[in-house]
Length: 116
Length: 111
Image 1 (cartoon, rainbow over the protein chains, first blue to last red):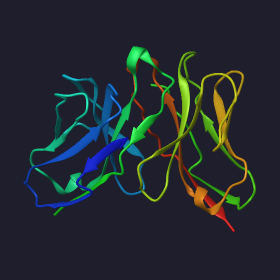
Image 2: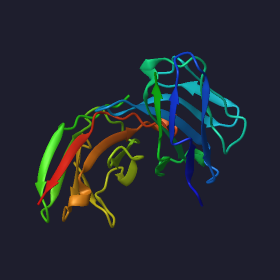
Image 3: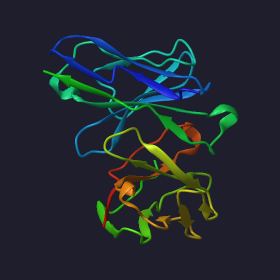
Image 4: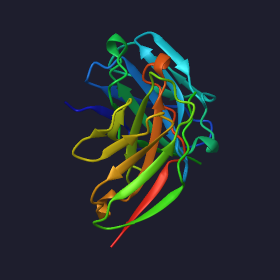
């Protein structure tokens, strides 16, 4: 199993450009989420999804859109990039089937985004 | 949301036990305590979790107080590769996989 795969690993954008960060998992996990991490800070939750077709906002959702058309994929879209969105982005998935609370989260290796 | 409090930084001598404390005084009876670590801005790595009883695996031990208001992660023989930021997280029962990270403890293992 590949686990959680994020692409790209690095990206530089100009202010106002749009892009999509990809996240895919092959573990059939229902729950997926996106975090951002700024220098010297902990991870902050952007958006999450409890299953295909269902998404919700986390702590810092402004400037980001998500969708969940399949169980495997959970892309994060920046519609108009701003320098404040310069950060490292992590995707995570967890097996929450049958209301499981006893399962670990798997994280991708991150996408390092710079907006100039 | 049940919040956690951790010291911002700790030092440990190589080969000694590292004891990382965490306070979670508002934890509910059915919420788990999870520990993750992050090395050099890589993706967080799962270490261990527990509900009420003490837990041990190949990486660490987790000691949870009887009132469940605090816990301690123990790395029994710390190595230089254990230098990382350690996060203590309470997993919220009615919110599935939602994990809210705090600032964590930056552990420095020194030779």
